[in-house]
Length: 160
Image 1 (cartoon, rainbow, N blue to C red):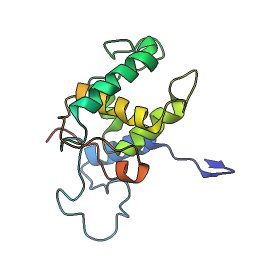
Image 2: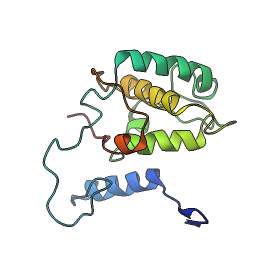
Image 3: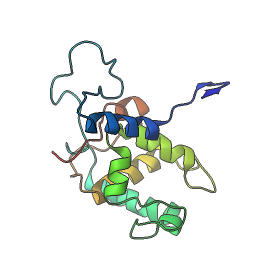
Image 4: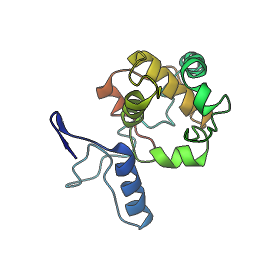
């Protein structure tokens, strides 16, 4: 879709298309790859399974979640009414094939619902680290960055 600031991106739609194509047995380049030429070397980009956040960051994210998200998505992250679940297969499938930046930017643009983009970039990264941990990703020794260019390098993949 065109907007005065350039084309709008829909990472959720792109992730669904990549998943459907992959499910059909066809190769799909990861976001940021042109799809022409050789595939990236295995392990070239970190994934959410490589310890891309710390336990301390996920704990900060849990506190920020409780303050800004739990009123709609609930303490158990299972959501209700118009608030989708943030834990479990539905959540994981939604982001499969995306990047950590896709997740952070989508949440930032839309949440909290009554005041999108009202948290700090660090708070959004902390909340995403909490969501990753709740969904089974392991903690590591480095915090999930708040910078978009670094988040774009972290892929959301299925459990290895």
